[in-house]
Length: 223
Picture (cartoon, rainbow, N blue to C red):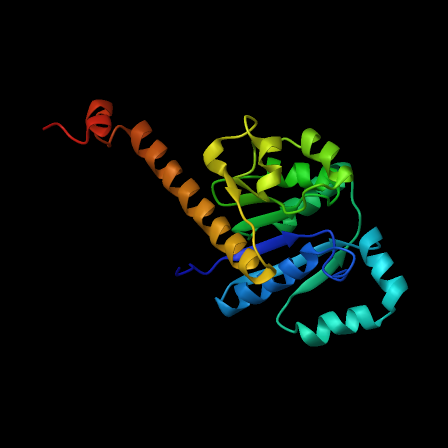
């Protein structure tokens, strides 16, 4: 798959806590995959989040050194917890030049909500839900509205939580070992962006009256 060059902003629960949080390895590999395909990506995690704190308590500064030395291609920053208007304003600035915003289920609920709400023709948003059978995420799945997001990329066991709450074509199932998952997430996100852009083009054509008549589209032409 040939990728157009895009700007990605990826909100994760933790990029540091690999042992505490298995998706961290998947997101690291996603970052490497994107770098290898000439993508511009930055990973953001909340400063002082419980997963990273747990990793730092267990390994100390070695956890941060390992991320910096073993994964030099990753752009990674910690950000302050924000709420209300401050959060919305900050997200607007952070995503102003982004093409894709990915948000991992389990980050701050308000942040995830507002990323979805900021979906625009120039900004496509993806909810990523990789962990099945985690009780603390089940209630969050039910509360978070998936319909504003361009797509939901999720583990097969999590599909029922989204079925009927967003278009079936927006739900993308991924599974497999970490490297395979990372590539699948990247490919699914870009495919969702391209599909959304095509849908918008079709709608715009129809509204301008320059497309074929509806009967022609449905029947493949007038003949």
